[in-house]
Length: 240
Ligand code: GDP
Image 1 (cartoon, rainbow, N blue to C red):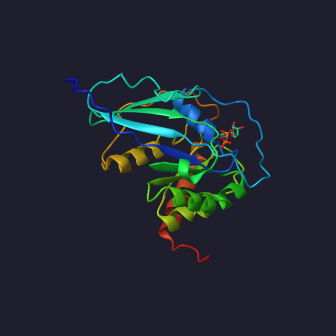
Image 2: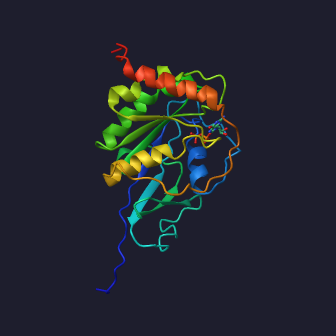
Image 3: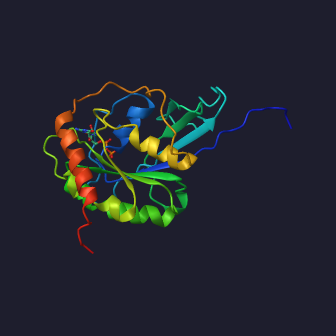
């Protein structure tokens, strides 16, 4: 064996699921390459077999200043590199790629997940329990973040206080807007903390991102966030 202090940092795979059109690709591309997906092809929105994007997000922890992980060893053309620095000197590097991968349980080896819906399309929220159920069938007891995307849009169909699913299932929920970068880092931070078992893990640098494509109305969003907080203090509505 070679005398080397070099150690592969642990890698965790992040699975992102959600109905087609909710913004999964957009979200990931913000982080990875700074590119923004402007082109959009409507993909079989009427069929139940929705497009499933599987993103492998490898969190790599190492306390050395290791650039050796900058090659995407799993080689995907759409891949990019997410590179963050954490306060406790732990370097986090992520290799991410996204692609259309058919939903076959055996292929999913996610260690953490994001379920995404679109706050401007009620149906995408209605489908969240199905995504959650499918995810739980194949990934046992992993940290999951629910993300309501496109909160930059004025006419939301899913109001913050109507989002209750995460409370039933003990998931973390974030309102995000991939196009404006609003809260983009929150899901990653939450998952990294869970995976590292360190609640004090913090960003020390902002990740390089594409400039916002839209501006978010911060006053309106603050209102949504406070409604969300108020709703969290209320008992869950009796549905089942
Ligand atoms: P996917 O099918 O889940 O991967 O969704 P896409 O990333 O392809 O996004 C679907 C459409 O939603 C595209 O037209 C995006 O430009 C748009 N989109 C994605 N994120 C946002 C957002 O945060 N705000 C707004 N207004 N549009 C978004």
